[in-house]
Image (cartoon, rainbow over all chains, first blue to last red):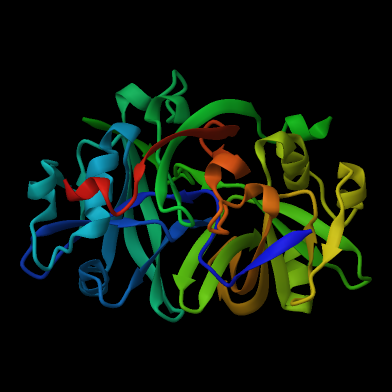
Length: 187
Length: 187
């Protein structure tokens, strides 16, 4: 018998997506977003939801672009900071000791030190309620050589991404490889 | 220096969401979806993206409701099967040996054996491209007593959710608790 716990924002896992934008003055900003994920394979699109009150919301509306940088476990402190502070009051890259890199493809910066990044052009804006969902078309994915396999694709075991538990408000690391997808279920 | 790997559907982590629906004949169906996540806090909404060719796509359009069930690691085989087979040709619940439970709140079934489930009413339908994004308003979250803390909220450590690596097409388990959110970044 399952217990009702109400209409809460609970899902497992949720990601830790660091959304990079420029403000009107050209200052690079980064914000942590757990409400998001891939939402289309063709065109390749990723969705990130932001409250209208956030600095990043205004930046995406103005610049029509954003990046998503994926932090490794060792950057959990910086990732959390990006979710606490506001670019309205602080230079978050500078405070976190991380480096903004201007994308050559879209009008937004990504985090140099994070191993995988997505460069996105604003594709659709969906007003849902408290959050606006920005759907970005992914123009390119870039990754550090150190997280690529011989075949040239990134690997969870090398990235060591962070997941977020919204019920317990905690971050988790990556566990063991369980199985090949589109394979184990054939049995 | 980062290497360009193209506009691919790569993000870490992505979830393994089992979307439950009824077809026109009232047969319960379940499909694995990795393109999705929470997209709004008020109203509480969750998004799942599906190709128009899928059986689940037609079911959501017709019934205007779906559930999301979160599998534990021990159900990785069943979760993968839900992503391989089509409800058009098979009774997937029966083949997987799992039990559909009719939601009392929305016109859709959830997976009894999975520890956390969300009951959703269709709220918005967004045509993106190959995928349609269905935004569901969460009417309730339900969880097994066994995954709840004393405070009555589910806990990653007890659920042991699965994450999906879309680049390597592999499933991963849950790692160690790294830190408290909205806390470690204050330092």
